[in-house]
Length: 128
Image (cartoon, one colour):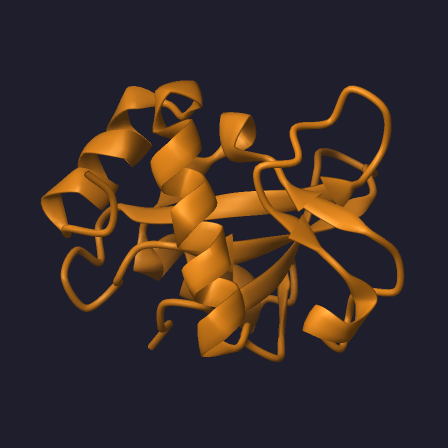
């Protein structure tokens, strides 16, 4: 079972590079639609609502930003199947303080997310 704050390495497409994604919603509240937000390298023009530094997570070795605009949802069944078949992999979850920062950024940038993702986070009381 996945938990809020879980971190998954997910390929960006066929043969694409992997990006870390954090489970932002609470899967126990809605296992059919789990909100995932990807992380991307901090660079010019990248949204800096939430910057993740190397000391914030053991799998981050350079400044990284949460890409709220590319948030998506997936069912827990899909994600568990992908983990079982090794199409994606799970690493250490984020700390509570980092999860709080990511959620604060989501609250600021909810208008950039797909409507479905925003609605899930609103329904769970994670953003306002």
